[in-house]
Amino acid sequence: MKDNAFRIAVMPGDGIGIEVTEAALAVLDVVERRHGLAFRRETVPGGAIHYRETGVALPEEGFKAAEAADAVLFGAMGWPDVRYPDGTEIAPQLDLRVRMELYAGVRPIRAIPGVPLALASPRASEIDLVILRESTEGMFALRKDGVVEGDRLARDTMVITRDVTERLSRFAFRLAARRAERRGQRGKVTIVDKANVFRSFAFMRKIFYEIAREFPDVDAAHHYIDAMALDLVRRPWDFDVLPTENLFGDILSDLGAGLVGGMGFAPSADVGDAHALFQPSHGSAPDIAGRGIANPTAMILSLAMMLDWLGERHGMESCATAAQEIEDAVDAAFGAGDVRSHDIGGRSSTGDIAKAVIARLGEAA
Ligand code: ATP
Image (cartoon, rainbow, N blue to C red; front, side):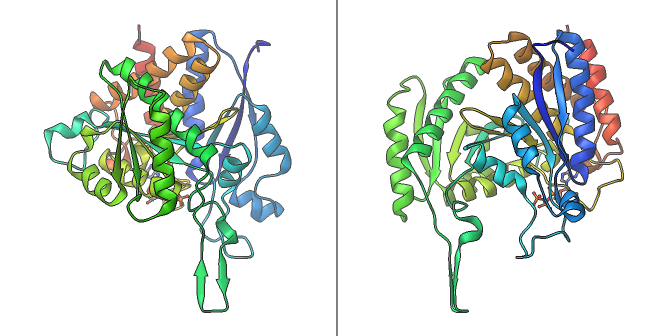
């Protein structure tokens, strides 16, 4: 192992999180060899089953390992019957987001060749947008600390801060500029809010447009959340980067995944200024866990996002190249019909899909 190896904290978690992590690590093995890269992997135990066995969902050493690593590769955590005493789910990923200040939830929604699309329009194959879910505040700011008064009323509080909105907005414009360069077209950032009704959203939008002035080469626009729900079904190919509040982003990213084949095809990254965590958008999927039929594509594409992020952050071209190669290999494997996952009516196992992507990677020039 090289001394200059990247340190990766690997958190497979529960259910299919474990299965898709194994598939992604097999792809990472190949990338290491192809590009002479090295990744020192530290497997970090945690999740709902870990909580059931030990009483702790993610031990303090797990948090420390995540903070010390160059990046975190995360499967999925949570299990239906395993709950904290107050009835809430085991979701240490939410704690990781807050603790490591991973404010930017990057959720690419891209049509993959060969994967059936929800929309009949021929333009559906052009879908290529990113939902940017603010991931540390908004409606999730207080999380379990919402208030129930007597048995009479319940109150949760929305929190939007200037600091996080500025950072999220800058992140969105930089992302759009980078995508514009790659795609050879002008970038556009559209904030999704409800600024016509809530002060918090009016405040968020005001700050967004202040920051937009720093990026004259990228277009800035706004859209109400309700109209966006309509337009993401009616004309998703018209959108580029969509920053939004935490809960809105949570909902819209599932809608987006539904447009391009479902959760098995939806990667994600939770990025902050100092740390980043990469995970598929889906959960532990107890209904299919242990059967070897989970679709690892979202996880493999999340791995590609990790490589891209590391490449940009550390100025390592080979990492960015490897990321693009993985994306191309996924497109080739599905596009040519090498594999068809169970979630889109096929019979390919988790391992089959990893192998097909690896075979296509071997063909990359
Ligand atoms: P969470 O709340 O943790 O996001 P969830 O229970 O809402 O989890 P998922 O675990 O994502 O949802 O599963 C939702 C549905 O999608 C399930 O029927 C599951 O089998 C399916 N699913 C999710 N991910 C995959 C995948 N990678 N491959 C195949 N099917 C999947």
